[in-house]
Image (cartoon, rainbow, N blue to C red; front, side, top):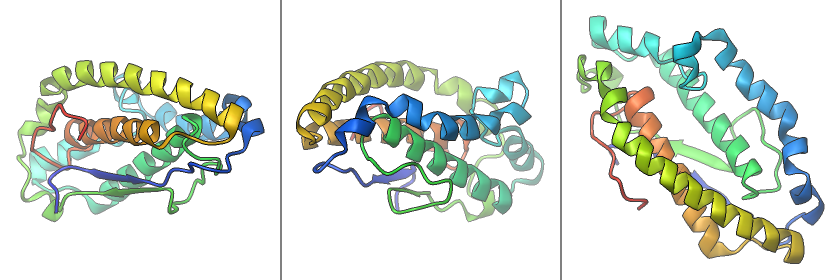
Length: 197
């Protein structure tokens, strides 16, 4: 088992719906509102994590050396939902993002054994230690957006998503999932690789 979050995304390559690809942002608006409503319950500092329960996890690890299972379940469900919205927006699938888990996105978490194998103090600085990852992630994000734009034209014109571009965009999403797993979800103490692989 990996010591990072592993991302499995099912991409639709052929027989794509050209019409919905043209108005994807408009179609996704309701589910984007739904997703963003979770971060409205947090203050500004926690909203950066996008609705992930960050502070309760830090406090539980710091004072009890335990990762609450209900917090882990919420964070996993939230990250999977945000991934389903992301792959829909990036035209990787024509399936409208379900608010329930489905086969389009599967995240495999490392075994955390209730938090006993996690450092109780490291969560205080992981977000800071991940700053180089954020910078590299922004560059990868721009790369992924450029590939998505090229793929979008292909979908609109031919109804197919180029497989090579899809693989690279999925790698960018997986890279960001590893960052979230390390810096915000706190499910691993192992620093993620800078590589897309």
